[in-house]
Length: 446
Ligand code: FES
Ligand SMILES: [Fe+2]
Picture 1: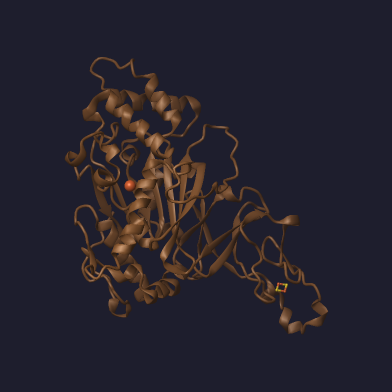
Picture 2: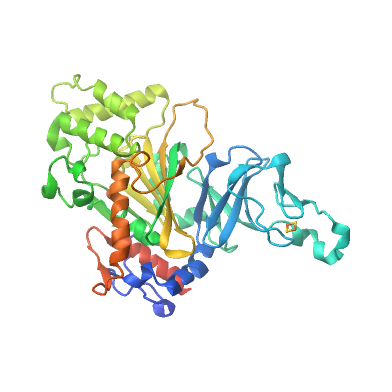
């Protein structure tokens, strides 16, 4: 794995370009011209996660994926593969599908004049065809326009560039890291979204480092406060704009919990479970509690608790990986450029996807999935968005995400301050931020 250190090439054509890896010009988060350049050169040419496969489990299922002014429909085919079509009628442009659901009769039907297409995009019915010149209705021209699609990590990804390089290559080396965790086995436990008054990149950057825990999530320091070590996690950047952070500590214990003994470990697990109902789930806490009084001499509780969880998983048919490599990922994060995250833990993970919202550089749509590896033989369920919730909605967001969201509006407003010109980044803990911006510049420059 390589660390990307080179300066972006061809930055001459990029406004507010990255010229210093420790500085990010503020205009990149609100300038209309910069946002338009992203719409023109980034989004139409980058692989992006369009849907989880569980959203379209059966042939004829569809879901709409919107990115800026483009709408794409993801359609499960009869042979269970997935196709992606531009969501515009070949007659007079009407959007064919909205939201998600099952296509009646396996037909994509335009609501305006009733033209229809099969699941594979070929035309099945052109109402009033005899009133058209034959050359207007050439089959190859009237069939739905496809967009490149590929599958990775139990998700369907799209790329509007027909010459795009292979998905797996574009996701490297982040893909390998998540494969060692067992990313294909993850399924949706819940899925929610929020609209956040912040640029899509700014919102992501709240999750590019773990050292904001001390100030933003003080409860997770278990009373250590400002003595909480800023270097509790190690941060790495990779080629293709990807990045990762993970614990430096013994993977069987979490953050400061080991030094605080059994109660500290249990407390931190409960805080993670109750704080977001993701990464650590009730099932895990119950297993940990079950071995609370069974720790053998010379054995420390976190190690025994994790061992019990691994045994429980083996018995229940949960494909939890407990290799040293996958265990080091627990409690950390993997970022896949440009806008997708995993935060793996035990047999669970959080996952985020962040997109611009309403053609506004200062708004974004932030989705959160709590994922888990179901026990063998469990019925796969159709994944449905539970809803869109205000960022301070305590009934629907745990304390941890509400804390993360709370900084973003203030930060976006701060960017407009006449006193401020650029982020100043820590070389040690915040390089994932500039690594993402440098990759963005490479995309914008070409
Ligand atoms: S616009 Fe779709 S059939 Fe006319
Ligand atoms: Fe956070």
